[in-house]
Picture 1 (cartoon, rainbow, N blue to C red):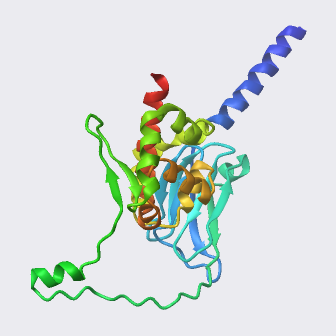
Picture 2 (tube, rainbow, N blue to C red; picture 1 turned 180 degrees about the vertical axis):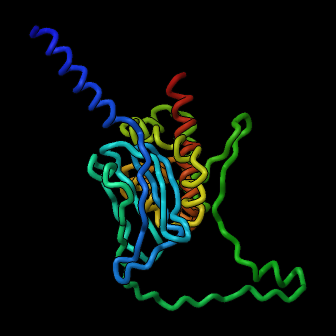
Length: 254
């Protein structure tokens, strides 16, 4: 009889484990912690499954998740928070997520428009020129942004071209888990829409488990200029890193 009971216990344990690992739907409402008012268009990302969504007008949201997944909530002017998915959370039904507003004193920004005269010779001198060059080499299907015209820019580009596999391995070789999420992020429309409107790199850092200086280092080593790194939105940063990583994977296979 002992083998029989052992089999029953094993099947029960296996069933419980399977239920824990099964993807379910987390439902809830996002509120302002100060006054309990609902928050619309809060960005919610499952960091483990790389799935995104936004809260509705009534603050409600639904997102697929499994036990031990982490949900990342971000909203302009509020402190971003992470919520760990537990068995109790899934069984509880609708959850309430309360976000704390940030008190930020914004500095005055003066925008000076470019006033054109209508005379080409004069206006050509007024319009600002950005000296960020992307070097192209015959036979290659892409360019390399070396930054402003500096003595070391061309040398940096050439080192990436003549030793591409070794060069890019130093950038991506030690981050296989993080980089595998790049394709998932690009494939999710909700995440792409979120990143297109953001410039703080917060969501990128949360999903890829990287620090801000790690992102800057990757972009620098992939020959993107300081101007691009400073001004690009998060979606442009994602596409830039992804393009460089895809190049690394091709070269690494060869």
